[in-house]
Amino acid sequence: MVGRRSLTTPDWDKDRVELLRLAHRRECRLFAWTPTIPCDWVPQTVWDPRYDMYFSDQSAWLFIIELLESGRVFTRVPMKTPPNTIGYEIIESLASNLPQLYIKIQAYKGKILGRSFHNVTK
Image (cartoon, rainbow, N blue to C red; front, side, top):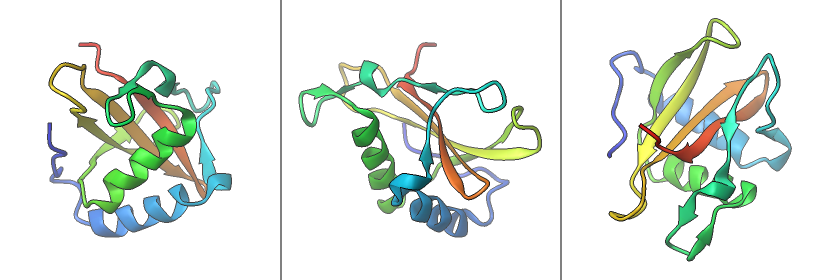
């Protein structure tokens, strides 16, 4: 599925640049679950057909960077936790015989949060 542009993302190009800036810096990448910032980050359960192996945390971030650099549009979504914040999501098809991949990221307090990286289950 191709990333779709939300009607509420007039500044996607600006947002994309900031997400890329943070994603390129390893020290800015976070993906650990906490009560205040829950996540479903399990790249080790997602098969990467390009390399015939499962994603790792590092390769998941590199794939996110590839998507952002390629100009793919992530949909802007309001987040419940933390409240009044914005996340960005995309669903990708890696191969016709594999489940789709769901990714959600968030720029927050000078970091980029990996909120979701898993197969679509619905």
